[in-house]
Length: 340
Image 1: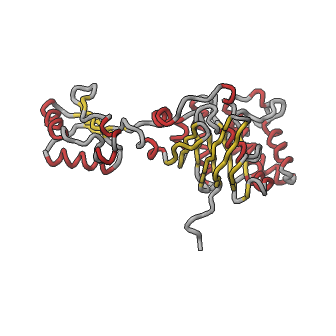
Image 2 (image 1 turned 135 degrees about the vertical axis):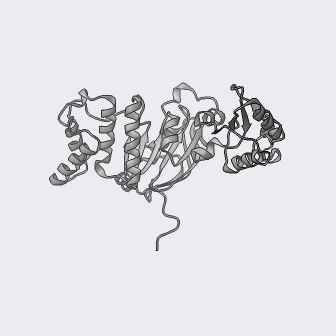
Image 3 (image 1 turned 30 degrees about the vertical axis):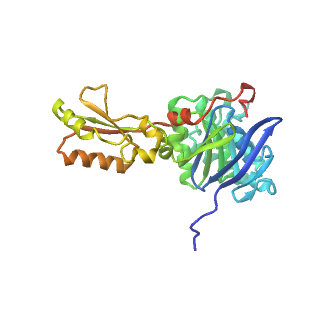
């Protein structure tokens, strides 16, 4: 019988790491279900790369426990390494070799037989749309091609957990979206992706769950939508066909709680800072503060419908991950530790 709670791809408890007096990770806990994208966000120096280095066995934690792909990080590091792939911030390809030669080198390092090597290299070149460029030196590749080759090299060993540390830094929008689709395809095949990124839209597009790291601590975790709802500023925008309907809506909604769908008492002091129904820059539009939930939308529509107020246009606006990031993270750490 299938377990209702499958073993997580990554489980960490109380991970700590310090360099001298500087604490980089201050007891973080992580739980990453298999076959999902988990994104770790944070400012430079927050501890993202250190977390990746610990979970990929490149450095040891000072304290805490972790299991990756079911293997204990400290007691079975070789088994962890056999189950994972790592694509770092900078491409690890050899510019003097061709694309195919880079992949063959990785196949040799994984001790693949000649037939398996040939089949694996050809399959990856095709999967990453590099077949035509396979015989060309990597020095002639574009940035997007280099990143695709870098990820293809990571996949030679058929890892079930892949750490992507800022994989699209420096790529143009088209190349970035190509990488996003590759990540989605990998997850569809059951691969687990642990993603760090500076592009918050990337986490929003890809991640099933997001953790926000600040000064070595996880300060928030959840889906993108859950995190956005924690931040004030969400609203429902209503536009009306004429001034008469707008005035009617203003009267009806004048007693709406500060955040529609929740009472001010439930929200505490934050609710009072949002204000009541407000005029929009459009003279025929109103903004109604809202937590973005379905219940809030149903409450608003029901109230307008009860008073026969017709709405011409309705749209829901929630804070984005930029707002979440700025609201929940403190000042960046010193420049001297931004690479950690």
